[in-house]
Length: 487
Image 1 (cartoon, rainbow, N blue to C red):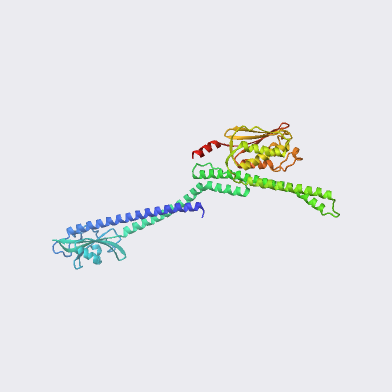
Image 2: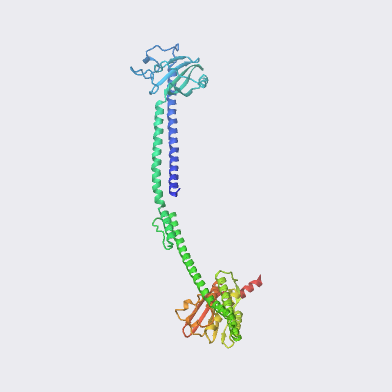
């Protein structure tokens, strides 16, 4: 069942219950009011009849009808039925305490108004009694009033009136209320259906937009809402915000998938060369007649070199994968000066003849992982050794809230078009293809730096060398140590 139908049915049900309650209250009030009016009129008629009734002998009045003590009773009309309870007439009957009819109005003729046992008990006790009876197919309201003489009940005056007019009126009222409520309910259902459709139209647009986006994968589409900034407006705004986030996530996923495909292709290409070399050398070793001892030594040397290359490639790929997988690194104060001096010393061992200047007078600390920071610096120093034969300079600098470590070389520099690509996996510029390496050093360094909430940047001019700078947040180790001592 749709929301539109549920809202319409709920609105219609509430209106129907309201109309039914109002109709029942109106009908009950009208019925009670009419009955109370009838009872008051009959009681007044019985009282006046009782006041005029006592006359000598209390026998049947043989006077002409117009002189009898019932002036309120209508005279008989010639040609009309003797008794019509449905007419607006009053019927009077006087009973003895033994239940015999002493006198009655002419319009009753031979009909005797009944009185129940409870009524007899009440009137004999001096209390009036009102009851409704069915007589000859008509409902009558009968008021029985005791006649009290010298504190003794002597007779009972019964005054009756037909309820036919009242029943017809109430029946007509009941029918009109039922028909009116039914018509109002039907009209309310139609109006509710139309109004709910207008209210839910923006929701339908959102649904259609979502279906179109799902079918076309077009996350650039947005829901157009020109109405007020109500709940529907908030829904449209939230939906558009969600689409913006989905679009960014979808682009990121596409980019990641593209990078993954490119990564797999690059890895396959890099692995193919050493594996092909190993396969060819194994084929040479199995050849008959076998190669000479000198050739075997050369072949085995090539196989060892290619095996080492494979090991380095796998290790670099594993390091890069761990770094990009969001591996949790430690965040602790790391003294920069001793760490940089150790990296410079280890780099000097790789090329003892190279000049490496390390001017590091600053005694500062950064928030980083010591092992990961050392690996980053070693990668950058190794990269500088490969791309230049001149001196290398390592210098620190205090920046706004951080510490920058710059490694400058005097190599040929990087072409401006290639500068944005140097942090991509397996990228190697045209002038570096004949140098050792597989193009994973800088991507690994970038991933490790970003995992420590740092930044890495490069500046280069062709023919004047390059400068790679890593920046980390500064940590006040001395202040932390003093606080620890105070504790």
